[in-house]
Length: 195
Image (tube, rainbow, N blue to C red):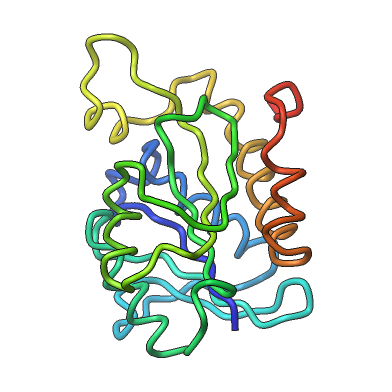
């Protein structure tokens, strides 16, 4: 089985925030493929299993708070043995990418993202694929924490459905064709990003 994990914070007050775009992407992917996400206590999150690209796929939303996401990912790997290097794909927000840009990578560091950093710490490795979803940097004078925990601006919110679809297309491409081939299509010029 392969596993796609979207990072975010639980609770309605965080639902529409920039920091929860990982949740939004995997919820969209689950809806596309009629995969029901249900609370799974032993996995510390919402989880569902379906099939994408002809293979079994688990989708997980950790409900452990962003900075403790690794606990849920480690539990899912224990419950459904898989090799993170080939079977794990984590989706999360990225301040260093402009809003609307995506970056797919086969591994690497956490880049200061506490949720991803906790995943790496808890599973003891960083050689798993990740899809970064650009949320842009805060304007001058705006605190980073305040920015990521605030809703998208009106213009961004209008473009968000296209971005979520683009991210789901990227996940499907990765699951179907592998990270290397998918990277060539996903890590593209900003003029090709849907608006």
